[in-house]
Image (cartoon, rainbow, N blue to C red; front, top):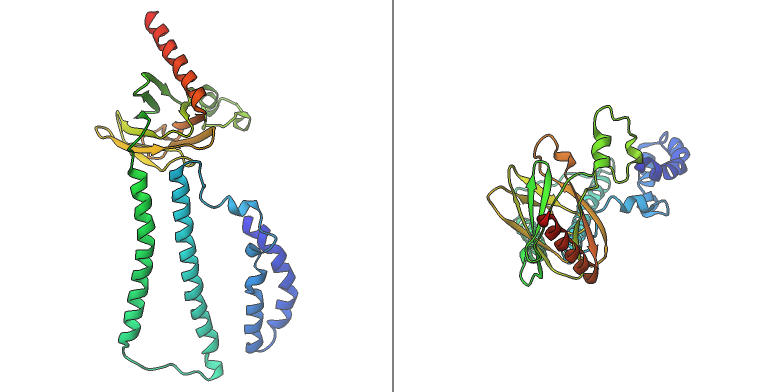
Length: 299
């Protein structure tokens, strides 16, 4: 659907010309093929390109880690694009320039040490060029030093438990009641009218902005995975083992994620909601939750 919307105007433009040229001799057929493949008229690089195309790309995110991963992703992407353009450019040039109809004859040789060295050294240099920034990013992702807050996340079938280690705040977070009711067989609830269907929770994770937060991941039963695309990468929560990652959210807002490791029949109903707020608001939230905890104990 998306490609049809983009390419249809260009296809219609050349449809009549293709019909006439395709009836000509073989040389003209080549010309007609090149006209249809004219890169300058491919809609991906034309004014028909709209915001939908960019929605296909990786999320840039709102943390230093997600920004670094996005930049690495784009670097590798453009390296692959350049390699593809060069390889296919040489291939198509060879096909058309050295075709049989022009009297070209295949060369006959057994080996070339020079060529073999070239096609070994060039890929090696490219791989090293990609490995250096990739290693830098991986080291950065694993460096949890100098964290100001530690959040322990424990996966359960089928909910999450959050423990704010320094602030003595703890709670469970599971699928919100509206989504849970709507998903039931025979509920007759229109899921389109449920806000953030299957992506809302009853208790949100609240984190301060401009603060490095260390997140410890584990599980109580089976393997889960905690993933919020806009702020961090996927990390497994494994019973009896502690994984860790860190986030430093720059923009206040609500960020949604899900469990991304198949963990049983309700795997699809383990959303994650992180609300990033300014530091002053976070301090108030912690204070309020500590008071509520004291009140619950006294009852």
